[in-house]
Image (cartoon, one colour):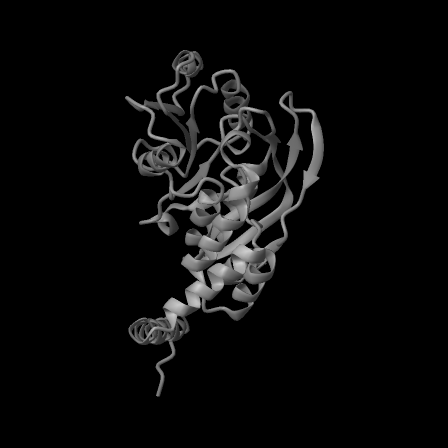
Length: 301
């Protein structure tokens, strides 16, 4: 491992998870990699997290402690900002990797430069890692990033996964940050932003044990009533001009979905906004055509 740029950073944002961290760290060590770092960013934990990490005495581990709690999204951003690897895997402190998954994800990113994000399926477990189910994502294999974005938005579902599912190309994450104003969908928004910069691959096999427990961020911070409003907001940020997205948002979002869609179109069709939107759309089409020709070294007549 070089001091400046290892091949891979596995970054673990953590808060009061000292009792789970050893399982997570050992599962990374078992992957059989040489050129990697484990970056642990401690969000001002009140337990013995630092003591647990220091006890490993491993040169691959780098530990950073925030002076105060920044919130989970901002702590994830600190992980990104301090990651030195060519590729990055954000990994939840309470999850456990299955053997061999990091090599498989790395191999895809190393051999396929068009790929920005590699994901995997997972095994859901209870708090003691007893397996309860095999969860498969919607898209196996390779897909264009834009197709996956549209699928997630139109179906109001996450077919990319959370931090522990994915590995990303660091170059594709330049300028991308977790949005702390989302409670449920900050991970999905982050993933969709990455997929704007490249293709998607799912290795189509379980890559880790997803530990469900009553103190997880999902269990404590994501009540059911926020799910539909956050999805509607995400559709609004990424692709309101796709008729399928709007139609399905109206259906799946119920009364609230129809209200939000109507309000969006009322604002979007105001003369000034409409002209601006058409100009932006034309500019986007031009840039995509230019990129298409450049990638194929074709000069349009």
